[in-house]
Length: 310
Image (cartoon, rainbow, N blue to C red):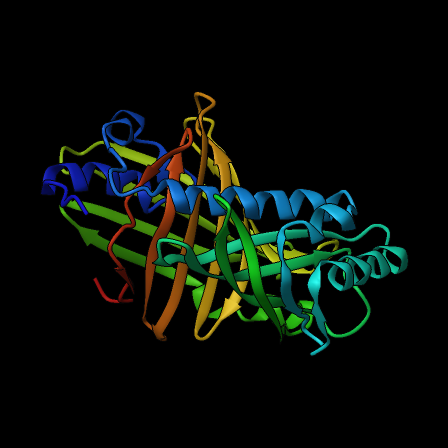
């Protein structure tokens, strides 16, 4: 992994600490070469996209074809399906009962175990919300290479309950207040406050580069009742914007961000916010890309609550 010069890291940090202009330094970003990208991992990611597409088209046959001939799928209720015929029938039954079901997949970890095996871990959100408690599924998938093609050999889902809408929004209470962070000469100041009768958190932020240049933006965080998850909407001064899907984790959230810069270049990242205590939390951005070009993960940045005393 290439270690960026401190000056270059500072230039990136101005953009990366803002939830939408996390990708605003386009010139700097274009210079980052993702030399460690693996064609094999890219092929597996394409397979995951194919799974999402087939699911959202209710194509049970196409889904079954993504498994090995004797592949196994264990769903989040504990039911086991072995072989393409059983797996396809299981999905066909799901689509018959829930014809409007759609899925959104976030890959949290993907690594090669050998030349012909890989392990994927992530989260899957199905909507409109099916019957039962609110939540999402985490999954572990083992991929194997058969005749030059990556297929799923084993997939296991696990259901994770999430609190109700009000509880989810209430979980953001600890963010209310003024915050600062400084790293590589970049200073970030933000203020979070409740708006709209405590249904949304508004986060206003300003980043100041070592030379004094400032950038500003705003983020709204609230509950999406249609999809049943916490969501953010981000807007930056250059016209860029993004939407984030937030999933709860221990002491914080993981947010999958999809957006566009002010000049129309698509962006993506998976950001983690973890509460350390009432006066500090960490932020880190992974799986970042701009215009399809991969960027390295950021370091964890500690963000501290501003003291009430000057």
